[in-house]
Amino acid sequence: MIRQQKTKSGRLLEIDSFPVWNDGRRVSSRAPKAKPSTEEQKRYNKKQAEKKLIRLINANFDEDDIIMHPTYEPTNAPQDEKQARKDLTNYFRRLKTRRQKELVKVNEALKALPEIEILAEQREELLKQKKKLEAPFKYIYVIECVTYKTGELKGCNNYHFHIIFTGGISRKELEAMWQNGIRTNADRFQPDKFGPEAIAKYMLKDPQGSKRYVCSRNLAKPKVTIQDNKITTRGLARIARERLDDTAYWERKYKGYRFVKCYARYNEYNGYWYMSVIMYKTDGQTVPRWEVKDWLDD
Image (cartoon, rainbow, N blue to C red; front, side):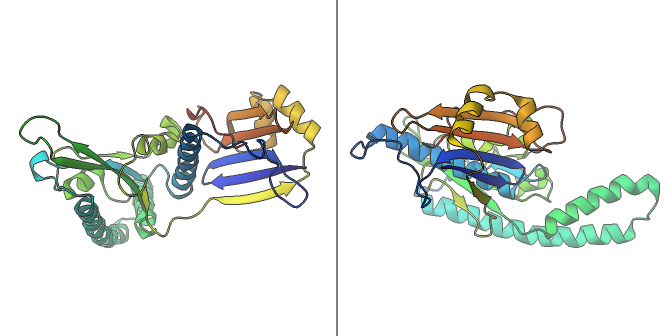
């Protein structure tokens, strides 16, 4: 039978269709003794890490949150990963304290602001900031290391980070709070403009250190729902052949979402089709970019 699995990560919706046995086990996609090569396994692991991070980011962050790339002054860079991570932990600690103080200021500003129409937009912005500051502070980051090969610092390490975290503080202030480097860019997370997958792919372009990425413990998990026998094997095959890029069809089927991409592949070994549809909820007229070449798991 065919199982449809919906994964909702914030405004990102995936609909995966694949074959399972009656007891719920996935139908094997390769011969029993056929094992993936080392390179195939590496590619699979990388794809799974990317998918997991894309989902986590979209489930926990949106356009009022921050992407930041802290660096170190080369002559003052720590020489081990443990110290670099400690520096970032201390930065997060200072940031949490600053958020508490900023929330007090915002509440005071709201109390002092007259409720007149001409100031409605200013009040709305303050309320928006208040909501973000009251939300739990969340983060995901990766660390990268460069070892200098020439010059006075030959053999020395330098670290930098790529982080996404909860907004509420001005980008200028966030940059000023990191005092270890000369280039620290803080930008607004803009999934509608650059794509809901872009920052995850960038963060994992060259993962280093003891973990691919590090997350705060309070991240929300994507919501997964499963339905069996909603579509037949023949029906899935027909849709995979005829509706692959049919935007109108998918947007009628999943109202409120924009169609982004549909992946479909026929498995020669087991004779089944596999399909994955990517949808995104946006108020904009333009469909977000999506530059993931391979999304299917078969």
